[in-house]
Figure (cartoon, rainbow, N blue to C red):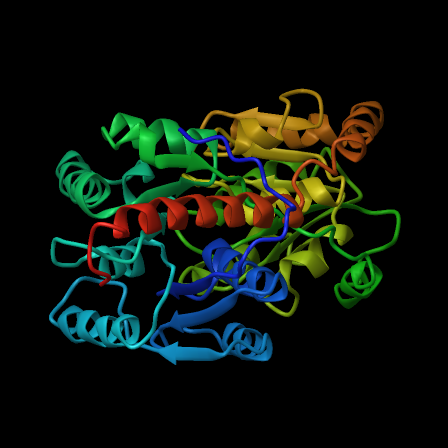
Length: 397
C-alpha cells in the first residue's frame, strides 16, 4: 500500500478525466470536490457524468465549476446492453484528448473506464466508494460474482486503486487485490457552516434547548434509517426534550413517513430533504449512523468536522473517525435496535454528552479537504510519471 506525501513544489499541470455514474451521496460529493479542487490547482480537468440518475443540484454544481468540458454519457446502474454504447462513447472521449490520468468512481464508471485492449494506455485509477461486496445482505453467490469481477479488473486493468478507509483497504486485500497498486486516501471535508442551524430547528418548531438526534443520508437499505425510528421510539420517553431529524431522500421515503405517522411521535420525528448535509449537521447535538455498510462516509466526516459526537454501527471508516467511548460510540451492526436505543439514552445524559462533545471538538480538524486533494494529486503525479517512463520505449495510446 502506498503512503503518499503531497509535494508543494511547482510541477507541470496534468490533464485529468474524472468519470462517475451516480450523482448523489458521498461519491457525488467526492467527485465534485475532486473536480473543483484539481481545477483550482491549475490542472486541466474534464468530467463525465450520467444524466440517468443525476440530481439537478449535482449537475448545476458540476457545470458551475467552469471545467473545460463536461460530458454526459447515459450510464445506467445495472449491467446491460447499453453498457456497450457507453463504453464506445467513453472511448471516443478518451481517444479525442491526451489525458495523463483517467479516474473512474464507483462500480459502473470504474468498470467502463478500465475496460480496454492490451497494450500502451493512459493510466486508469479507480475509487470504489464502497465495494459491492461490503454489503452484508449480499449472498454468497453475489459476493463470489462481484468479488471475482473486482479482482479481475484490479489485477489486470487497474494502474492504481484508491481505498477511502483502512477498512475498505483490508476488504480489498481479502479479495486478493494487488497491494502494491493500492493506496488509502481518506475523504476530506471543509468545516460545515452553522448559518442554517437555527433556521432548520425553527422550521420544525424545535426549541433551542431541545436535544436533537440527527441522521443524514439516502433513505435506502444500506443506510438503514428504519433502525433509527425504532430506536427513537424506545429512547424518546427517557430523553424527554428530544427530537429525531432525518435528512435525505430515497426509495424508503414513503415507508419511513408511514412509520413516523404510526409512531405517536409525529411532533418529535421529522423527515426532510430541504437541507444539505453541511447545512443540517450543525443543527444536531449528536449524529446517528446506523448503516449496514460503508467505505468512508462523508456524513461521518462532516459530523466530525462540526465537532459532533457520533453513534455509528461498526462500518467502514467508523474506527478511523470514532474513538469508542471518547467522541462517540461504535455499535454492533444489527437490526436489533435495543442497544442503539440504550446508547442514545446514555449519550444524551448531561455528563456523558459534555465529555463526548469536548472530545469531538478537540478532534474536529483531522480530516480536511486540502489533505485529501494533496494526497490525490501526489498519486496522480506518481502514476503519470511511471507511465511516462514506460512510454519511452512504447508508442503512446
